[in-house]
Image (cartoon, rainbow, N blue to C red; front, side, top):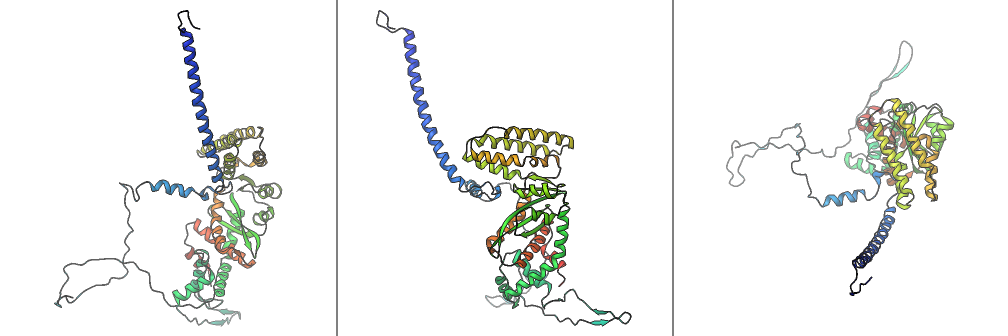
Amino acid sequence: MISESGFKCSSCLRVEELEERVEELEGKNQELKEKLALKDEKIKRLHKKLRKYRNPHTPSSKRRGSSKSKSSSSSQEKRGRKKGHEGTTRSKPEPEQTIIVEEENCPECGAELGEPREIESRVIEDIPEPEPVVAKEYRTGHYECSDCGEEVVASHPGCSEEGRFGKNVLVQATLLKYEERIPYRKVSDLFEWQYDLDVSPASVLDFVRRTSEWLQPEYEKIWENVQNADVLYVDETGMKVDGEQHWIWAFTTGEETLVALRKGRNKEVLKEVLGKDFDGTIVSDDLSSYATYVKNVSPKADLQRCWAHLLREAEDLADKIEEAEPMSEKLHEIYENLTEFVGKDPPPDEREERRKKAEKELEKLLDQDYENERVEELIKKIRNGKKHWFTFVTESGVEPTNDKAERALREHVVHRKIIGGLRTQKGTEIHETIMTLLTTWKQQDLDPYKEMVKAVKC
């Protein structure tokens, strides 16, 4: 409104100011929307790149890029130990031999030097030069008992009943093959260079075979212990045998590990290895064979599904599908609250009550409507295993993830990358026997060489 004098009233001026302000804010809002759209587009591109390196079934420790990010952040810091870090030095060993180093005459003028002015002491550690093989003759007595007529043959721990090579040859060949991952041909070359021992790659294979046969009783003991375990972590990974797909199964308690190489990946393997009366808890991924075994073969057993697999799969889905984000966040929340709860080692009645609460939380999440098919698939998978997500809450000593079994399989994955696969059924038996013992000895902080020497009787 304009007054008679030609001036705008104060209300009109205020309206114009507000209109200008609105126009200014709308402009800024549009600018922010454009910036946000650019950022959203950039995030989508980055997620697309990230998906090339991420897989919901890849353990977090194996995710590509993690080591790179750590190294890039640490590279900005000054290298070396931080100020105030307490230094450590390797302890000096006690010398087994003392060598006197003297000089009689001056190298410049030839004058006699006499007694040294001071003595400098240095301890040098070295490895011995390659040594030839020690050949020993054993003259073994054969007897006939005068009382009962029994034929008796004397024995000696260093004398082989089969072949002409001692236990150290067999043990070192086996450890070089399985612990150091050296091919049979290279082991043969190494023996010739190190010990002047001329053996063929086929002989090295025979050494390993004989070692595995001597270890068989130890393998059987571990198998029996696994069948009686209270909690068992199980996982499997592929391995070709003579070009055909087989599976390496790892059954571990954390202190003992049984390795079984089978053609199948089904409940029949579990039935063969664990039997029909296994009454412990199996911790596994979502392979249906485990639930089928517990339901149809060994109903006394219980099952705990791996939360690490579930959370990784939910994260991967949330990265790609917006609808999955709240579900992923809720699953993480449930898991974190439960692990914090069981970490306090509550009594059984509190555990039971907390499990019921968690089951209701999960049920509420599953009952929601989801439009995306992939989200529905994950929800269906969670629902199918609903009975087995919270076993760790009520069963003390059961872990919610299958990390122990995954760790037990890592060495086999490395072997697979190096050798590609195995060739014969006998090779599978050798592999599972030796890897069972090596893995178990390491879990128990035992020296594989010493333990193998004790087991190999030659």
